[in-house]
Image (cartoon, rainbow, N blue to C red; front, side, top):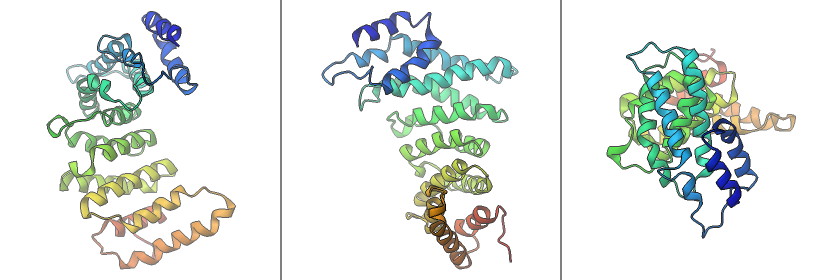
Length: 283
């Protein structure tokens, strides 16, 4: 194990891209799993480690490329976005067991990157990077003053809500940070946007949209919405012939409950979008 660790740290500058792909495979195979009594794992993300330094530089380079003082060009942004995404994918894999403290080093670079992406939401190819960044920063313990502005994830969700990878990261962030960070206007904007994504043909988009709507609903009224819970259950049931009866039962339940929801409620808007792909239910 020590030999692998020394090789990776010594060869990082010249074989960075290859090692980025290698680290998750080593972790999943147990090759980087250290004894609990050892503190060697902290060296992988120490303040002066090659991974920490290179990851910070990668995030800053992408942020600079998205600067409003320049005219962002995707040909320049793409390799930087891919490299940043790889680092975000790798960092959780090399964290000491149960200790997310080393991620604190990346708080400011990640916040700056998310702010830059929020100013470039027309570039939909940044969605996966934004999702990874949200998921990663969600693992960093933060006091109220240190949290990112709620307007940033709100802006990103409205812009990138059709991307399943982004929604997965956004859900992870909101689940950890708490949906109560959003004000009433932001919850309204998010609900409108996420409900409209329920027409998507992609199951993961519908599922993660429902997950986030559930968190928002709990923060808004304090309880779980039966409509959101039933729709989520439909998404989570495997599409097998043996499950057809259960699926039909839950969908029928959504239709039966629909007339009883107040017209200004989330449930009254969710059912037509989810079941019929439209803002109004058929007569």
